[in-house]
Length: 180
Image 1 (cartoon, rainbow, N blue to C red):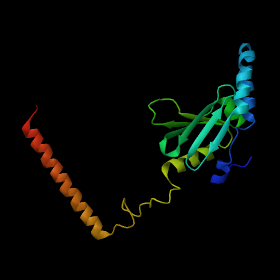
Image 2 (image 1 turned 60 degrees about the vertical axis):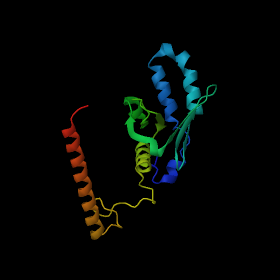
Image 3 (image 1 turned 90 degrees about the vertical axis):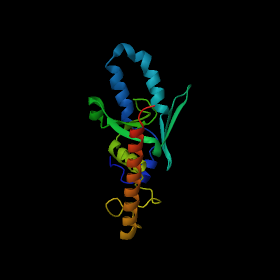
Image 4 (image 1 turned 180 degrees about the vertical axis):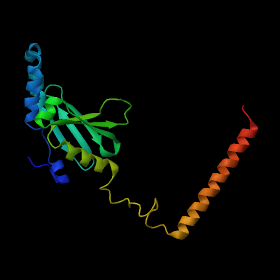
């Protein structure tokens, strides 16, 4: 399969790859006593798992009786991890784990059954970092926006020095005052 080359291909992703069902079977066959109990939940999860990529965020939904949906806006994404075990690598699949600042150490959202996981990761990084955001100009120089010229940079540096001096004087006054 050819990897998605643009954002439109990522936005078109809606379902996991059929190899995810193969992965579920192989993991269940590794533990034969659990097969009769876990085959139906895995089947329902595979057949109801849906992804939706929008310009604002991503959502994942699954479930038949107890429908679950998780929505994460790109601005809330803190980190993205790729995780795959030996069987997933053999099948060419990986899980994309998306973490937010929710206070939990586990992933807020997991995308599984994606063969082009690196393209999805790169897309999510570009969305969370604002690379596609044309409203914010990118810096043109060493930390200076394009609109700031040499005179404005000198004024900014003078204002920052003055502020630092005031903070230093305030800190010294508080230190002389002592505790209490």
